[in-house]
Every structure is written in structure tokens, then in C-alpha cells.
Length: 203
Image 1 (cartoon, rainbow, N blue to C red):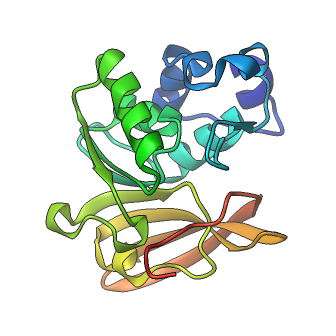
Image 2 (cartoon, rainbow, N blue to C red; image 1 turned 90 degrees about the horizontal axis):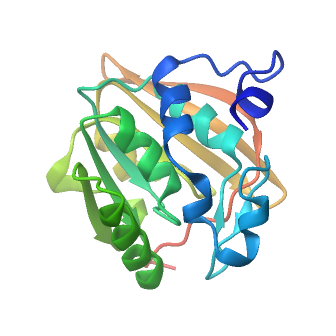
């Protein structure tokens, strides 16, 4: 999976800590048993409640896009299976992760605790509101797609922090990186993607 999906010339994942985390975290334990034969293929897979586990390349790409450091505190919106959470937790100091679906939140936290992660904080609720009492964050990574970037997430980004988020509609989404520099938000479009829509309690 690492050699063919992440290190090939047209993929270009190069950040050593990201590659090491992808090697160490077993993707198959985050995949429902019925799909485990396909756990190391480069495609998203269903988990439950209409959600998916992202393809390995996208997980690695989004992680590398926030330029994670061992001292960072990172907010993740959309815990899902917990796979992206685990990759982040292998690299950074603390991960704060929010999941809307109660059953998924419980399942992911149980698994991640079983795997021995002690630097992850869990919350079940509306990710579009962020985690204000724990802010500011060095990076925010969002694994579901809102139509527009939620303002609270921008407000909770530290100076020089990065927000990586897919935005758009079901048929047209772009992965974007927003960097907070000198009280200005600089936007970059990274690549076309397809994520499940972001849900929030205000709908």
C-alpha cells in the first residue's frame, strides 16, 4: 500500500512522519469485517451510518497538507472510523476529534483506546462549531464536506495554523487549505475530491 499508493511518482507523499504513521497504523482494523479483504486498496470503503473511511492516499495527502509537527494540537472534524484520527495521533502532541453520529463516536473511541492512544480527546456533537474551549489549534482537518467553510473553524485556527477542508456539493468538491497568517486567511485549492456531506445540528 505504501509503495504503490503513496510513494509513486504521481502521488508524491514525502513527509517522513506521515509515511511512518501510515506504515504503523493497521487500516484493516478500522474497516468492517465484510470489507477487510479490500482494506489496503486505494479506495474509500463504507463503515456504517452512510459514512466512509477515506482512501489511504487521501488520508496521507490531507495529513501532509497540514504540515504536522510533534508539538501540534490538531482538531479533527469527523472522527468516522478513527483511522485518520490515529494517523494524526501518531504524529502530533494532541488530537481533538468530533463525530456527529453517536454510535460511530463510541466505536472509534473504544477502538483507539484499545490500540493504546492516550493523546486523543473525544467529543460527540456538531463539528461545524469546532471545540472553542480547547482553541486555538495549530491545524484543523475536516473529513466531511460543507457547502461553505464554517466560520467557527476559522476563528479557532491559531496564527500560522492551517485548515484543510473539502467544500462544495456532492457532484463538485475541492480540497482546500486555508493558512492563517497575520490575521489574514490565505486560500489554496489543492485537488478535486469527493467526501460525504457535513451534517450539523442547525439543519
